[in-house]
Image 1 (cartoon, one colour):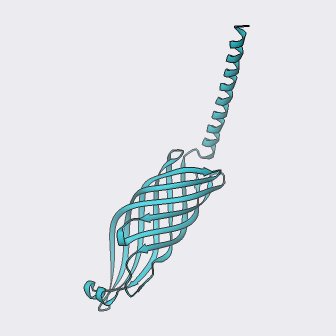
Image 2 (cartoon, helix red, strand yellow):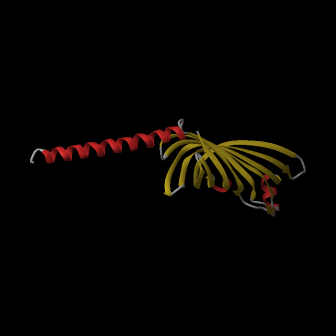
Image 3 (cartoon, helix red, strand yellow):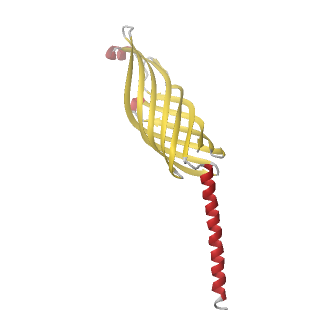
Length: 202
């Protein structure tokens, strides 16, 4: 009796270990089958806003969007690239600004390419929260109207910190609907992007 009891326990533990191993292998196989490369991509479109100073008149919001792609380093962490584009914004300078800068009006477009990290946390079934941080390389394209009426095109390149956040819903296998907020931090030249879109994982 003293030798049979440990034998039974040992067999039970071996059976449980084997069952857990099968479940683990099945889950890993499903994960590899659903997204074997760990690569994803997508896009979002919505409203972009510029945090710039107005003169006599200006508009701060315009149709904007982004495309993005990433490579998973772990199930919840990925290296990611975002390409953001912001539509044209117009500003008419006041008399004092026109006199000091020689510019009466500005039409501006912005592009930004960010490189960084995307950290994802599952909130509920099929809902995932994401936080992004990185560095953005910017291209500002301005059409200037001088005080005398002449026009000039100026392109300015720069860089700035980038932050983002989002919420996604997995509605199908390897496919998500998402909402996102992106922020390129450049003081009075900062840009925001609020968008909705989708993504797919490969």
